[in-house]
Structure formats: structure tokens, C-alpha cells
Image 1: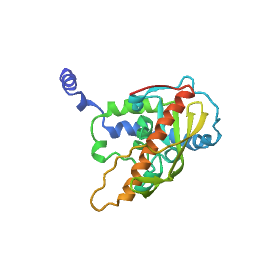
Image 2: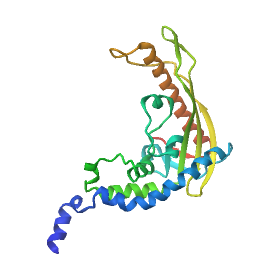
Image 3: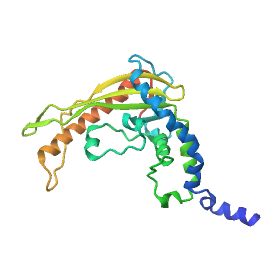
Image 4: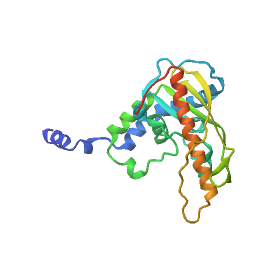
Length: 235
């Protein structure tokens, strides 16, 4: 017995359960979370426009560990959804789903984790992530209302383009919708872009300008959350 304990002390990772074993054990809890998603999705349509976010707080740099998860409306409807390249241009995704989205996907029917990764003995870390994900209280749902690329009308001159996102904050443990508001991203005054061989300059410029609109929309989202009472510590 002392020999086994010594070996475990010398190689803690080797004594951990595999990721597969931990995720299999976590599946019932996360299946219940999946079952709750349709009702949460319906709350997006009922959120009050003048709600308050008192008590909602997190640190931007720690969103993966926070009690807040940012999801697109599509991900709330189907956490396994994969957007193609065209859809990525037309949907604002902050890629901050954190432990909540990761564990939903890992325990789902289309887990992105490879068989090799599933057999790694990193179970303690995966368990901690999934426990943190289950404790996620607030979902910030981003529903892209409009997304159109601007049109180049002259050398370095563009017109049009829209980037409108509706933001809804849900207390998923209550469950109830707390607040909703809409932001319209504006293009930046200076736009940097790179054109590679075979690419069209007009298309690349339009995408670059639109990217600055997404950046402005993100800034407005965080500003809007703060204005409504959320405490967000900068990175």
C-alpha cells in the first residue's frame, strides 16, 4: 500500500481519472442543463428593457472561470452549432463561453474533444472546469440583428454597413431575464488590412471595416452592462 501511495505522490497526473471518465460521470448533470436551454432561449424575447444588473460581477481576464458566460443566440439554441466562414462574418461571437459552453459541448453528442484527448489523465482539471461551469449564474446572450458589409465607393472611401446586436442578460439559476438592450457598431476612422495574393482588395477592405464595427459593438456591450449595474474589472 505504501508503494502505491508513493507512486501516486510522485506522479499525480498518472493517478487521475481520464477526461473520458470524468466527462461520462458529468453527463447527467449537463444533460439537465441542455434540457433547460429552450426555456432560457424563450426568455430572450421577454427580457425587460430597463432592468438592473446589481450583483453581477466578474473580471474580464477571468471570464473562463467567472459566473458569467457569453453566448450567441445560436449557441443558446444549440450549444454544438458550428458557424461557417460566411456566418462568422454575420454573427458577433466574443468566444467567451468559458467553462459553461466548453462542458456543454464536451458532454454533448458531438463533443469536439478528440479520442486521444479523452484518454488523457487530466480528470482533476476537467472536473474543476465542469464544476465551475455548473455554477455559472449569468448568461449574456448576443443576438445579431443586422450584419452587412460596407461598400467601397472610392479609394479608401466606404459607405453603408451595419452591425446591430441585441444583448440579453439571463439569470439561468432563477431562471429569469434581467435586462435587454441593443447596440449599433460604428466603423473606425482608421482601418488596417492586408491583401494577400489572389484576394480582392475591395472585399478585404469591406471585411476590415466591418471588423472595426464589431469592435465598437463589443465596447458598447461592456459599457452598456456597466451602465446597468454590472461590475466588470478590466483585463
